[in-house]
Image (cartoon, rainbow, N blue to C red; front, top):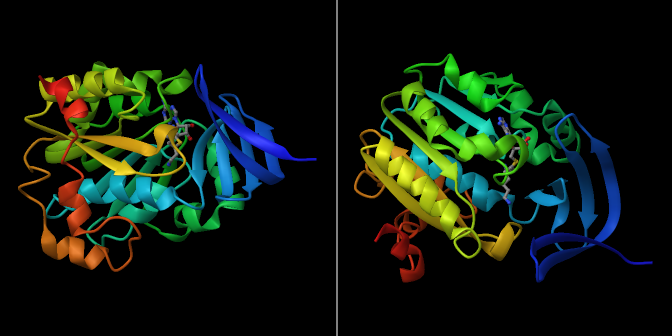
Length: 279
Ligand code: AAT
């Protein structure tokens, strides 16, 4: 008998992967967690029936979150990832020697436990790098007590449902602003330009109100809705395009599978149907 995982994207559209084996199923206080061995994408991790990590393409999203932000800061020392309990964004941040502290604030410890067991190449860094500290709490509450602390904040959150709703609100971005140092940078996953343009517009409108510099980047991936994803950057001093650091990118691209200097620059070039949100 064949077994397929389907993610329901739109009322008339679903995305399906043929499953060889279900490796794990469980329920936490916050969500349902599943790990599948799929025929096309290797292992896949889902939360409430939505793909979070696949072995095939996880590098795209995680590299973009970490490198678009860290590249443009000349000497980032403290980073925070909110959400992202799988560890992928942390793995990429950890490539920079300049970081002294890399914090993870994930609401659901169950996510990290499952990823440590089933995705060692993604989550392993959470145990192996002594700069990494794990906090299992709500990202919003966590930031209320942190002022002027982080150089980089990566908002690596689920889609805006359940506990992640607040991570897409202007008040939360204000908290991020206050928790950043005077030249800090925040990057947030901001959903798909094909399916979620109103969400992208809201995030961008908020960033523009709060940060002197705000930009939108995109990337092509496989596992998230429509295969085309966006990242919103808010920055206090450095411009993601003008302050691009070629030397840093060339060092990093020895390790990366998606990000490189050309991708950094090109990712800020937007199609007209996306640009229209700024008019
Ligand atoms: N690294 C790619 C994986 C993710 S998962 C996002 C994580 O955000 C989940 O583990 C979830 O438990 C966590 N999370 C949700 N709300 C909060 C919160 N309020 N505070 C802290 N962590 C939270 C990103 C997937 C993108 C999906 C695209 N379709």
